[in-house]
Length: 135
Length: 135
DNA sequence: TATTGACTTCGAGTGCGCTCGAACCCCTAG
DNA sequence: CTAGGGGTTCGAGCGCACTCGAAGTCAATA
Image (cartoon, rainbow over all chains, first blue to last red; front, side):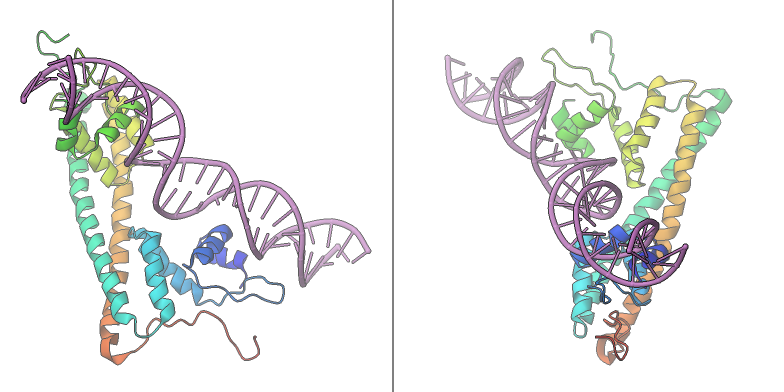
């Protein structure tokens, strides 16, 4: 598979794939006789996993640490697991925050729904202090 | 309340507060006789809500649209509600993705836990195609 | 043989959301 | 009266994760 095909299949752009290889997120790809990258389908599994890490907010720095351990192969399993477990905690935390904020959003929206015809003004522009005497 | 105090209470830096005012996320603050910003505690409510929007991934551009409607005051409730409802959909979507990825993470971690002494190698470095003849 | 189009490397540019430093001002306490 | 510790404006710089363009190579097709 050449880079264009992999781009289509992975959803990454060819530019991004080269960038990922450059920084070490993707292993250096074999080249064919004309120096073009030639991929095995198995790379898609790795790219998809990277996508999961990205979706869950892992910075590239951290992915690189994981990728490096992975490239070193056997004997790094415990470290990889720890890295992933730490990350999982971040994700759980973020998830909880998101859920809490979603509730706030729901409340706010419900407030607007109530305002629709009643104009209860739950959200006035009343930040500028104007106690008698100021200004 | 001066900017330093507000910074402490809101968790934003004074630099960030000024930046937010500059771009229009925070209303232009009244100044005292020596041209220093003087805040009413009610601004904290708004900052906290901005934090929710930020936590849930709303870009500043969008927050600005909301802030502008809010500043216009009455008559913009329906628009504000719509904006928030659209955002809520984004959040729900993101939440779902996060949950799915969390499951993947769990599975992966469980795989490593199993590998701990057994070395099942669920994650080999086998991307470089090497069918007999290549290279 | 000529053209087409996907590939190559390299380095510069982009958008986002801050973050910081410089140079200056003003009030209060010692 | 002086020193300190706030504050002010302004514009430049930063870290992240791409994204793009230029200039060139290569192989398959008309």
